[in-house]
Image 1 (cartoon, rainbow, N blue to C red):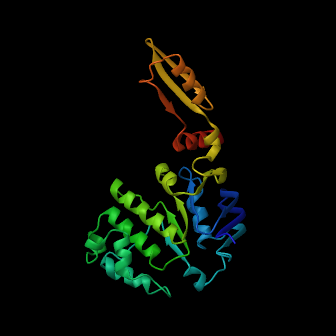
Image 2 (spheres, one colour; image 1 turned 45 degrees about the horizontal axis):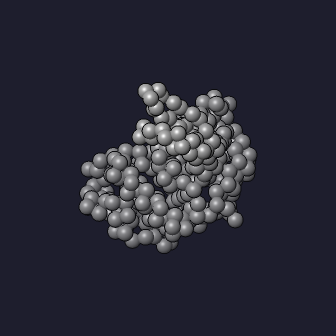
Image 3 (cartoon, one colour; image 1 turned 180 degrees about the horizontal axis):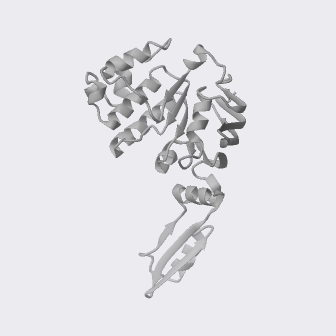
Length: 277
């Protein structure tokens, strides 16, 4: 059984279709990323799957309908919201211990705080933390219950590059332990580094789905080969640069200026969004 199974999911706000009939499957143990511009329907979709919003269409999350699932089901999921309120007068340890008390088998507070890189701030009040450090507290609260399925909505907003890389290591470790992860992010390098598969949402519909390497035909897009010879710049678009390289070598062409580039995930993403609009 998949961790998430969605068919014909729809959500309308005051006559506006925020989610327009999407189908989605996420396998157990998979890291799945949802990409899309602001207003595409990512957060609405995640909130529906968390059981926070009513909807039309079919949805099964860990084998239950999130709209009617009870407390036991909720103890099996972890949530890191895009915008989270915190108890500013509690210390980091107090906050983590408080939330841990809601779960039947939580991780030790000190272990969770260490996992998110806040050991040195464990006795600090949350009001004294930076924005990035508060975001780490949000992540700690999301994983303290040992979730089978973890929802991460823009989890690394406010992280510096070093903290973001540390967070990636945490996500990889959770995935290795078998945690299913549904991630939304605006950082395409983050999606490429973490996701087994991803989908692009635009205006409430999925416009492409696949692995980071194959999304939108990326793997078949070919390569652009550029080189300079005799003061003349040459550029060719080829499916496979191997044969062209052989010809250039046979012709004793100076290859010191040669470059081979393929479409990045960002190139593919922007093309998909632009084509859909």
